[in-house]
Length: 407
Image (cartoon, rainbow, N blue to C red; front, side):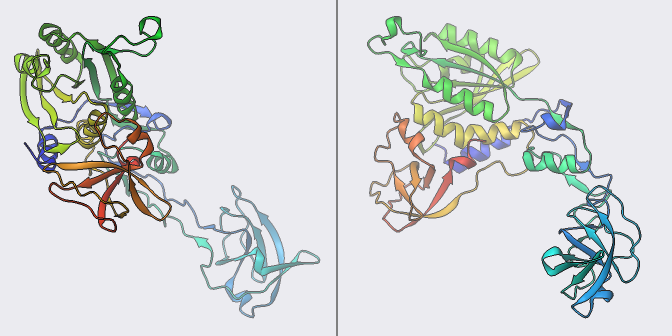
């Protein structure tokens, strides 16, 4: 079995990012991956402006710390003031341009308005005080976003701040999903509302689709496929025609009713099979052939928690690489204190469902079975526990929050 690290390296090394691009409106580019670096054509700020409501002054006029000046103008944001004459002040509001001749702003809390349009400045400002300089954030001609950046709210705001109404992005990754298992039933479809003996609801369909939607994928859902080799092969062929990646859930073990492995080997090839991870040992990776190329294939375990965890750990970074993300695609982990004992060291790398407690430590969900979905709702993330390692209360462990894994 491959280690988690070796499996991640293998998957990322095998990824072939999409190359087709399109131009989309910046307002609609959330979650997309930038296809070309973006450069600002303007300075930001475009001119010197004030960080505060107050008075624009000449610092030399206020050196006494109690200067009384005539207020000659009022400058709201979006207007251009007149040049400031020596011995005068301008009432100015946050974001407004500094008038020519002024070299400082005094916040209004340090000023006292007087009669006949006068103000007493009870402060001796330094030149440049409370002034944002033109171009101090972004200079015209400067690169603001690199190719391969996954666009979030921050990047979209930055692009808009320099006037970029549209952005070149890679096309959406096309992902096909299907689910194997004659025992699977969709919610709402059980005859009379009662599950047949031995039947289970297909929760993985809901979990995996939502995870793919979070990643901005275009999804083709082939539903539940009969547990036969012929049906599995036919669905693989159909899915490969128009998709970049095929993801399945269930049927990846080695029993007589598990048809994924022989089906993929018949329609393409398997390049990776088992990983030393708990939950989720059976994770299949390969390719399914089609005219002129192939679609990648990832077969996830059928147990709900195993499917969820293996998607987060392995499928998510692989998808981000396929989408064209150039930076790190692996989640950041945090060093935190375990407030529980875990004496049962396993030979596999374990990912335990844990929750942050009020004392700033981690509590363990009591049932770590691969079928207990309540642990994923209860928990705040996964504790990455190396193979062969027991945990004692007070140990510092590696915690990966779900917020790092689901977007």
